[in-house]
Length: 385
Image 1 (tube, rainbow, N blue to C red):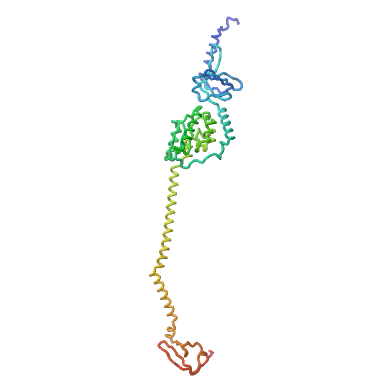
Image 2 (image 1 turned 30 degrees about the horizontal axis):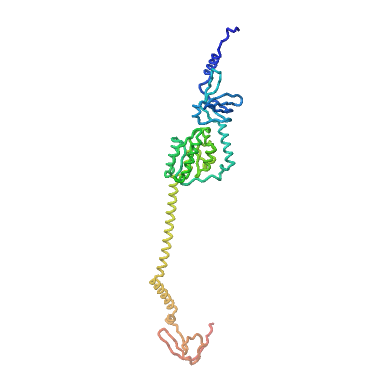
């Protein structure tokens, strides 16, 4: 092959051809999974070297984009980059231009484990520190994004369950590096907690990936939650998402709506409970009234039995019975039947022949009078054959 048959380029033309090939061969934007091996801020722009352990490439976050990013990566962080290839033809330099950058799951879990280990060592994650939730909270503070579907669901649920509890809505950002703003809001609520009679705090965020919940693994923010003056309830993300904030909170709910359900009593159950108590009170009062009525009737009977007229009647009845008994036992009844009473000269009844003597004058009493007689002869009792 002769030299004249080969394509002929200047350096600029070659670089332009390479750039054209790259532009046609790659999508305008792509995702790049990598780790940050070097991070340097120059003139407001963030220059990165990212690697997967086998190869590396340079990346740049322009200052205009950097100011809008929620996550600022550090060396060693795992990241997911939304970017495009940027080829500078003047010097044949290739970099990834970053449009957005987020922490990868490895970074999220690493921060979670680091802060969790620190708090375990300090005793901030301990079931013994967890406080009981108030039975009937006067007021609760709800920290969440406004407006949001999570807030709407919480307000609806609170109205249905226990409408007399006052709700203080504290708007907070929940996306990106907003730990300082949430912490500032927490301090303000803590300072006016007594004034507004706040009995509990709800920290809520609806939905989102585990990476979006990374702000709730922030050490300073979670330390503020652990030392908050009233019980804290978290409802962050979904049921499977655990953050350090959940670990230091007094109660962790699976969702924002569940946080309200766990914190506020049920109106319907409270009504049923009141109805049961009212019925028990009614039954007790009826029992007490019946008991007192029975006691009063007993006392009335006692009083009636002690009435003078009644006492006199009882005495009269008793005397009447005794009179009848005496009458039944009176000797006159025997005299009427033909019996008689023999008395000696001293007037004493004669019971045996041994008590009299011959020629003694005896008095024989009959039913209609008496007879005086003289003892002519005394005969002893003749035994029956």
